[in-house]
Structure formats: C-alpha cells, structure tokens
Image 1: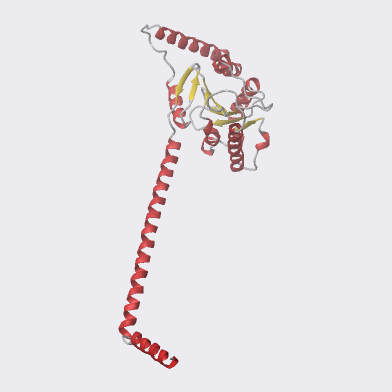
Image 2: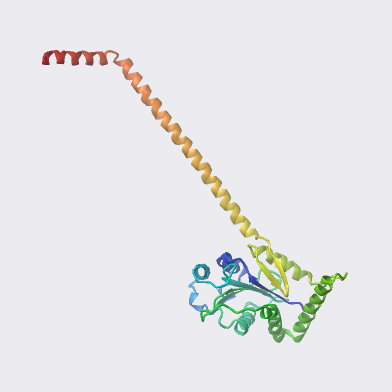
Length: 299
C-alpha cells in the first residue's frame, strides 16, 4: 500500500479568479450533495438548496474581491484576495470523514479564516479543495510567513497520520527530505537521480493543474510551479469569441438589409412618380394654365 499523501497550497493565485475558483470547486459533478461542503466561519451563507448555496458562495467571493480592491494598501504588487488548498487521501474515503479531517485542519491552522472546503469524489481517491479568504473574521489579513508556508503540508500529514497511522507522517517527512537533498545536489551541479514519486499522485497533479484555471504560482511541498489555463476557461473564451463573431455578422447583415430597404423605397417612390406622370401627362400643364387665368382675373 502506498503511504504517500498529497497537499498543495497556492499562495499567490490570480486575485481576479476568486469567484471562479469557488464556482469550480463547488460544481455538482464532483460532489455527492450539499453535505460535501464545509463552511468555515461562513455558516451565514447557507442556502435552501445546492444552487442557492453555490450562488451565495460565488457572490461572496466576488464581493470580497471588490472590497479588497477598494481598501487602502501599504505594500506593492497585486492585491491578495484568497488562498487555495488541495489535500488528498490515498484511498476512497467517506465524505463525512474527509470533511471532518479538513475541518480539523482549518480549525488548527486557520482558526479565524473564512473558508469553503469541498470534498470531491470524482476520482479514484477522495480529495478536498479549499478556498480561503485572505482576510480573517477579525478584519486582519492572514499572516503567512515563509516558514508557515513551507510547513503546511507537514500539518496535513500530521492530521492524516493521527487518523490512519504514524507511517504516513514518517513517509511524508522522508520524501520531503529526499526532495530537498535532490534539489541541493542539482544546485551544486551534481548528477543525481530524480526521486521516484507515485504515478497516481503525478496524474492527479496534472489533472488538477489543468482544471484549476488561470495561471498561478503554487506550492507542492516546497516546489513552486506554473499551472496551465483550464479547459473550462478555454471553452468559455471560445464561446465568448463565437458570440462576438455572431453579433458582428448580425450587425453587418442588419446594416446591409437596412441599406437595401432604403434603396428599394427610393426606387418605388421614383417608379410611383413616373407612373403618375404617364397616367396624367397634361395635369401639370393644366395646373399652370389655371394659375395664369387666376392671375388675369385678379388683375
């Protein structure tokens, strides 16, 4: 049995994709039901059904983005709106158990944070996506220094080991040390073999990187990577482009139609004048003579 577990914390996601991420992790295709979601300090956003709940959560993330954009800032760079976390099990686990462990992780490490944890059962191993608001319930931003950032995966392994056995934390620590030694040797120019990792874990990483959307700096243990744009985002962009083309074509067609109608109207008017002249050729002449007679009488 593999004792590898997986934890990825995204420290600098694109701030504009906060609501998009909430919408993605709460999609119904990946969840069993509303019970798959755990709201950490966000209980007031509960809805009467899944659709309403997703709407509330997405709207909240969008509102928080706007609020952060309008707050006075002292630092440089982009405004941080949220963090992202993915923790994975090495097995299929019941949704309530996975949710329980994710909730414990949030209580111990982000007690004052506002977060949404979504248990996904759409792969052969259960995993949990977590969206974390960058600002806490006390109004302060989450203080995440480099030491805390690099040890988040260790905190998950500790919780996991407490539930499933100490060997999980032990193996995770060894793997992390092995990766660190490999990087150190590579930096020194030594020829060393790359550490072997579980194929399922690598496949899961690639799948999630694609699904996560907009380019973002992420951490897998101590490793930072750049993710590719998701298929969902690409489909949305193509749909928007197609819609723009349809609108442009419709506008051009409408303009051409209006021009043809105007020209047709002018042609009909001209035909009408010609037809009237042909039916009454002396009418204008008679009118002229009548005006002359009137003038003579008046004189």
